[in-house]
Length: 191
Image (cartoon, rainbow, N blue to C red; front, top):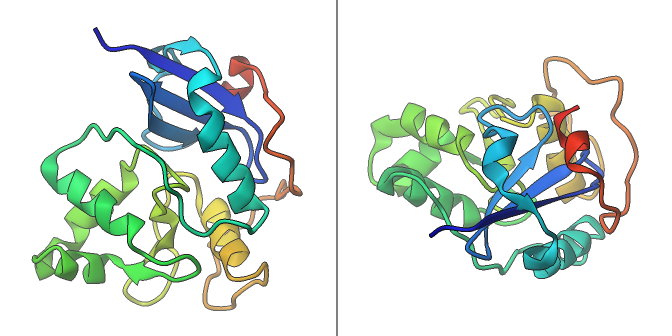
């Protein structure tokens, strides 16, 4: 029998819902994220499986960690899992295009399929789907919203806005950094 648990932690990018399947990280979802599963599928609220995940997220947001080293459980097709594995190989502070990832996967014409798999990445930030950009260098498609994508890329490049990356619209609630250690309630993740 599969056991699922979740907890919600604060971050500079809003509340993050962490989900574990049989004690292994299987989801990191932002509020209002496209393809976010229904909250009732997250299992019981229990922070115990997430100690190391929270520790590494804290270090990432403190600019002390550039590569996550966590066990992860991916539920997806073989193609999706291949895309997600390639996302993990994009170095901190760098980007790749959907076409470049398609070529790495051995199918130059699969950039749209790569984009669809990228959009269904279940473990945002840790599996850095925000590092994938359009062929022209523009920000396109991010399940967490283009404003968050812009902010994550800027953060990884030292916190400076990069003129190359300008989302179509900026959110008025960009917010400031919030320590990760703070937990919020499950209901906060749906607001």
